[in-house]
Image 1: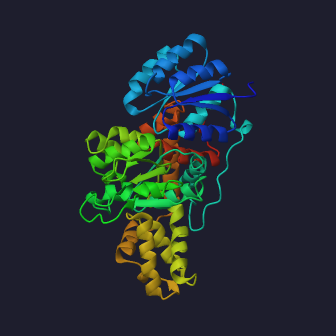
Image 2: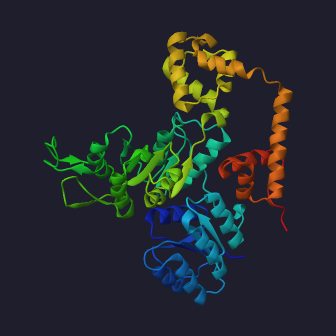
Length: 450
């Protein structure tokens, strides 16, 4: 068995390189990182490489050409291609030229690690796995979905990669950005937040990039933009899907080389700010409709972190509610048993933001004492009562139906998680969470070893 596993990472995107480098080193692998196909061929001559991971689209020598030339001198070298959705057909064709497999962006780190382990012959027990860090005060992650999400963040935060945070309005995307910054090596620097939907389009460019005195009517002095202010830290662009096409083009330049110009100036400024973005829109659909630039989408979406809605992680509801009521009443108020049941049953369409607002209202009405059902809004009480009492036996039957459905689909798809998730109509991440729970119950959810 190979004792030293060295992986060659080839990508012109500094964020993508940083992500793969940090993640694989965190798993105990040695890495060699280069930014072009030409340098990859040089690295192959200078180092003993166990696996090459290469982007497909790169300036100069493409990933496909790098694969072909690498094959001439290293016929048995495993090569894993990383590709955007539009390149999938090319990537599949490249497998005829010797590519081991391909991954689509944004990369599923669990899938990447599984392939690397398969190639190198190393199991999880032989690697130095990175453990999650303690959550900051006031951050709740009792559900398996959120616990897994923060485990991913613990790995991603250490890199310089760009992150796209997605999820419904009110799920806590800004909180996630704060944790990424706090766990990064930039934590001592500023976290600069910009809500792209809250600033008029005519002012947003100046807000982001700054302006010179006299650049436009009302520009009575020079203004430093948010990208300059975030130079040693992180900039968080919320509601990125609301940005105009003209500003999207300017933002693309910053994601490519970190350079921009203040409004009214021809002087280029360079920023080292790490970029985090968030949206509650489906940007892939926006790209297809021509409302969002495809090249910017792939630049921002090096890693996508999707926060599930509160109704899909009910284990978090009561802990969050308890946290909020304690904040609003200085820890004096508590819930009646009925209130706890009502809160757990309500679907929370407004997610964590709605829950917080409901707890603020309850704190005022209960005067810091016992929170009773009458202190909750009518919509919350009504929706919970409409569900009706759920018998334990009914719940157990529903759980058994779900268990059997998942296991049956898993076997039909030969334990391929991606295909199983498609067959069930759920995301791969959601399937992983459910399989983790089934594994804890003693169910066989992995392919039998040969």
